[in-house]
Picture 1 (tube, each protein chain N blue to C red):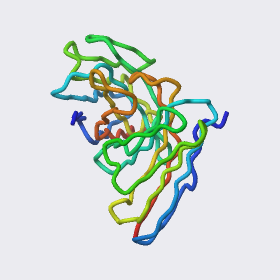
Picture 2: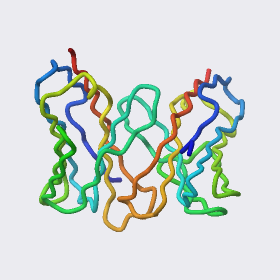
Picture 3: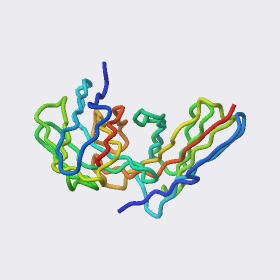
Length: 113
Length: 114
């Protein structure tokens, strides 16, 4: 079983601060996705990274896939209250067929005004 | 498009009761799946389907049945509910079968088994 460890599990910060969420594994993933989930709703895909060392930016969010494809990070610059939510990483092992995503435990982010 | 819809939103069951969680999508997606979400454990795959008439087990299939008679619908059946099945259940669909495909999730069904 592939495992994805997310850290930290909880993050409470003030508006304007920067933060980084980590997603680590001992296994190699062919691709990794980041989702954001708001209370009472399902997860919504933010980004997919597939190449080792890849960096993708989505406004104030920067996603990085490790060179060895075993880890990923999400960095938020100048966090805003609207960034509050649960952030999930999900990875697919090499040769994985559909539906075999492994999800991390999630990071609950609270941004205070 | 309504996307992925799930019913009911909330359900309370007694141990031993059975029920069906409904999931429908109007995006003509071939691939659909069911996950459960528990605190501190992320999402875990229960069952999935790669097309009408084809289903397979995920990570935690015990106690659940699925069938896929149409492209649009993918119901999840709890045969004899147990307190351990208290969870939030999400249905998801995607157009393609590659791991990097975007999965579209429904709003979830919150289930409490007493």
